[in-house]
Length: 332
Image (cartoon, rainbow, N blue to C red; front, top):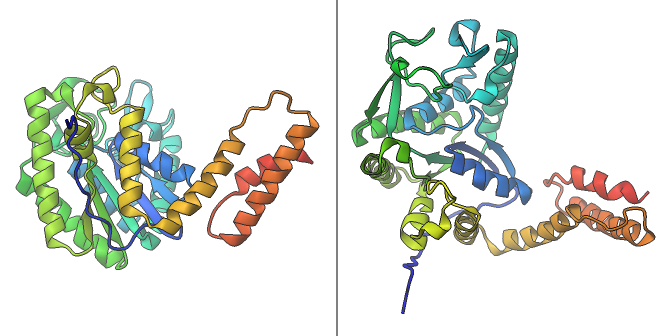
């Protein structure tokens, strides 16, 4: 008997390799996958605005990167003894205006440069519910979409569900601008499997349906757009609360690992997978906790992996293994 529904995933026409640069933007699930890409030494830039859930905030962030928009004091507001931006996650907030602006503008400049040379843009959409600012919100344009509520009072926001047509229009506009800005760019869309139950069960499903409909319309329209079914892998393949964290909202380690393995299988070629295995062995050595760090045996262990890592760095000059080389050089 079959207790799971496994399905085939369409392979990426041009597989991702370690030579590619990947910019990842969107929901918290983006960072789960981005962390694994970083661990295997892919060149990535993750969420330059912090976590973003809705299509409007994603499109606005990408537009700001293209234009290298400078955020000014007029774009910030003060709440709970800190300065914030409605377009950014709280990790870009600061105790002074200058601190917040420095973090925001430095990240935008980095994103502008990275996006110009990126090979892949991975967009993970989490929700089509948007929170627009009311007249009570501090220092905000009425009707602007908040990417993060920064624990502001509820009456600062008006909540509504975007239509598929609205999502299409917002994303279609920014996709055209992206291809003008970087003609070689390819875009992978995913829908986050994180369940937004704070909106309600029915409301979460309506939200995901809007995203799925809009994204597939775009993928069918553009040659350089692709869809990876992270949402379907968790909701329709695994389909069990055993694969969710205790909050019953976020996929747990096993679910995330399963999605990662499917991503590797469908989006990477055999040479890349072989290199990832070599990197994995170095990662294991890097995280190894010795019983006696001062022993000759451990020094030999470190030196052997220093040589192995050095050989890999020389063979694959586009990898960044400096942290591991410095660590293994402790044997001196």
